[in-house]
Image (tube, rainbow, N blue to C red; front, top):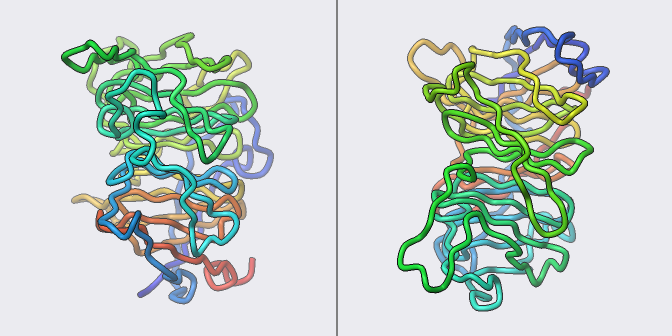
Length: 334
């Protein structure tokens, strides 16, 4: 297995000062240099399964010591990855608490947690093909759905849908109580989080006329007070205005991103090569030192521990693989 190291030139405003004035941002030019061997930097340690069964994680998110997964066979789950990152401990599974999880019933990951997942304070906001679900994680072992968009009453014969809450990426404001839900093709919704509920304050179109045709949002993350969103054929950057609105910034068309994950120190961009691309498929790690590191893995979904030491990946819809990131080997000591 080979790892390649690339030098990357980026805006000093973005990676050094972390400023958020969109007017000062420049396009992020990725300049790739000589490759070198970093094969010891990505170390596969263990694989984990839920109840020793085939495990398929559709969405993965780590916040603090908790890893949230949506998928099968658990539905929605919370794992402790802080006590022992190589032996995650299950704390909550929807499949074991179906009756107590929600007062509205009929919750499935396909309906409410297959498309996106974000975390703000003690709450996790998920979205699927029907709408969104707000989950209270104040007690890690007793997760509770506290609101749903739209509500599904027990008497409903069909699952109601609300397109305003069907997202492919969910990110959060760096300091304010806002979620941002990115729909696949048309707009991003700014949602204010108040006690036990979220409400849409504004909707911002991807294109000036608000028509569909911008394809297609697949993931996103907040990194150094900026938002990075995977639009399949480009990586788009936004800054946060003083009123909480998103200000469009640079667009990088050199990558074909399918997922974006961040920690405090690194941005992980998964790239799927298509005809015309010169970059190999895999995960590219952007560092604060203006360098990019290539990891030759193609996860279906993945998350990274907050200390950036462990990467958790669904590679085959059968289990979750846990990798240790050896930064001395990956970076050559910088």
